[in-house]
Length: 328
Ligand SMILES: [Zn+2]
Image (cartoon, rainbow, N blue to C red; front, side, top):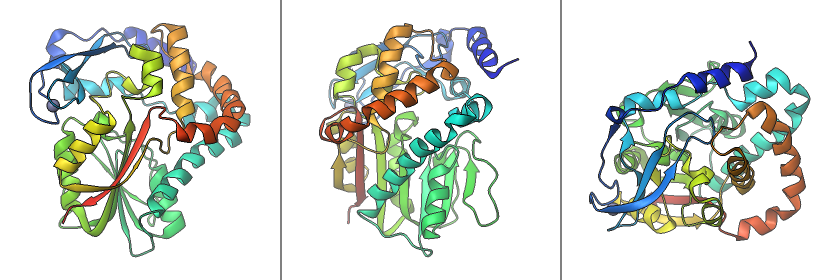
C-alpha cells in the first residue's frame, strides 16, 4: 500500500475526539479564567476529524486552546511520516530543491543566533522540540559545539558518537545533572507546550552566564491570520495550544525573567509556507493536505515567490522571533 493511501486511511479511521478527551484550562499567561471566543479550527494539515476551540484571555490577551486536548491524546495528532521521507519515496528528483529549502531554514536560524552569540567547540547548545535534529546537526558541523536535543516524539535519526545527543520526553522532566547551556532554542516549540511559562522558567535555570534563548512562534496579530481567519495555518489545531500576539509573547517571556534583546516580525520559517498552506486549506475545506500532491506546487510556488522575499521581511506576515537573555 502506498504511503499516501496509508496516511489517508489513518486519518479516516481516527474518530472525532470525545468530550472526555478535553480538559478546561486557565490562561497560561496570567492565570485568569475570563476569555472570549477567538477561533474554531480543524486539523487542516491532515484532515483528521474534530473541531478545536481557541479563546482569548480578556485580561492579558493570550490566545489558547480551551478546552484543550489532554496530553495523553495529543500524540495521535502528530504524524510519523515526514516530508523528507515522502520526497525520498516518490520525488527523488526534487531532493536538491527540498534540501535547498530545508537547509535555508537552518542557515537562517544560525544567522539569527550569530547576531548575539559566537558558537565554538566550547559552547553547549540545547534545542527544545528538536524534531529530526537538523538544526543541531548544522550547529555541530559548523561550530563543533556540544549539541543536545529534546522532543516528546522520537523522530531524530540515530546519532553518530560525535553527533548531537537526543533525548525523548517532556522538556521540563529532563534531568541535565547541573549542566548549563550557552544557547537554548525553541523553534516553533512553545505554541505546542502544555505549560509554556514553566518551560521558559526552566530554560532560564539552564542558561549559563551570558546565555541566550531564542523563541520562534507563529504571530496571531499578523497579515496571514487576518487573511485566512479560522483556516490560518498558524492555528495548526490541535497541536498548537497557545497563540501569541507580539505583546502576549513578550509579556510571557519577560514574566519568566528574561530581558528581550531583539524582536523580529519574521524568522526562519518562510512566510510563503503560511500563504501556500492557507490557500490550500481554504481550497480543501478541511479535507487535509495531501503531501504527495502538494510537494511539487509548493516548490514551484516558492521559486516564483523568490523575488518577493525582501518585501516579505518588512511586512508582518505571521512569524515572530524573540532573542532574550536572563535578567540580572
Ligand atoms: Zn491571561
